[in-house]
Structure formats: C-alpha cells, structure tokens
Image 1 (cartoon, rainbow, N blue to C red):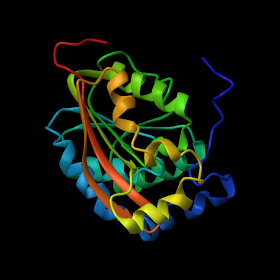
Image 2: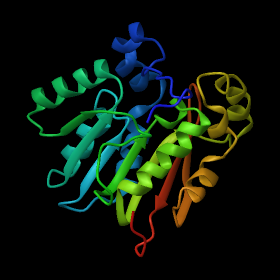
Image 3: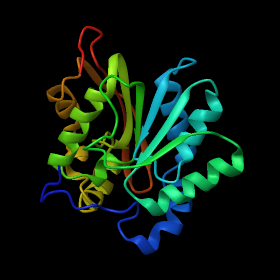
Image 4: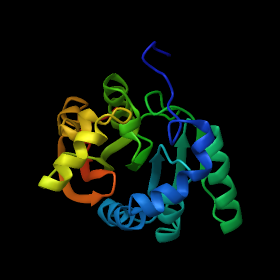
Length: 220
C-alpha cells in the first residue's frame, strides 16, 4: 500500500549525487569503523538468513557475506541506481547475494524469514510514519528470537556532537534519531528488548548503534 507520506529519498537525496555515495561514507562517516562494529554486534551464526535493509551500494552486505560466508545474505533497497552498483560489486567479488528492489515499510518477504536484520544509515531517510511502519515490518519478517541491529544518527553524548547535531537535524528526517526516539519506536513495534549499545562521532554528527530482539515466544 502506498501512502501520501511515502516520498522516496535517494541515497544522497538527489539522484545526480549517487556516484559520490561510497566516497562520502568512506571519508565523511568513518564507514569502516561503524560497520565493523555493527557486524560484530550482530553475532551471526552459520546458516542464518540475514537481511541488510536499505543496503545501498552493498558495502555492508558484502562485508557481512565475506565475514560469514555460510550465512544467506539478502539486500533490499528502493533505489535502483545504487542496487545496480551493489550487484556489480557482488559480481566482481564472486559473492552470491539475493538483491531485491523494494521499500522498507512494505517488505516483500514472508513472516519469520530472517534471524538477523541490519540497517546502516537508512532510517534517517524515512519520515516518522515510515520509520514506525518499517520497524513493524522488520518485526514481522524476523523469526522469534531474531535480532535487528541498527547504526544511524543518534542523540548527542558530548558538547561537540550536540552543536553539530543542531545542523544535522535539518538534513532529511534526522530529528527523531537525534532526539533519541528510536528505542521508543522499537518498543511500540513489538520488540521485547532494545537498547543503544554504543555511540560514535562522525564529521556530520553523532551516530548510535542499537540492538532489538523479537521475543522467542512471539510469531508474526
């Protein structure tokens, strides 16, 4: 179902900036550091099915596949241009990943499909309604006991990040993240456990890692 509140924002807001996506993340966001932390936090076991939500150009998806070659990796993004880049990266690396173009708030997967879902710098692209719908969809497609692992803009923890966040909150839909609302959204979406597990500082603002768990006795 499409809502009036469902405008799609490309990876760097404008399609013509897509070729700059990888360099911006690598040099401006300290991508290697936070993505390695996210991978370690996810604690993926062999043979798990793992969805990288809003996978962009597939950098995290490929790192997950390289780190956990026995896991089954899926990547979903709404932007066909960045997905084309992801597919090309995987092909050149000889890595098999199931790529799908789709929207995070209307996932094309059955209930209880995945044991892990990762979301790296994608939730801030969504307005508040889309964030809530996305988290409900993630809860639905996770199997009981499954986990969601997020890295995205988060509340400032230092005076420096507080002042930087005053600028960052005017970019896209970051205000909810910076105001620390993600744990509340996770709780209302049905996650039995959720917590901010770490926080980092990037040039463009404060980043937080989150872990959320679908209770083992709940089904979608």
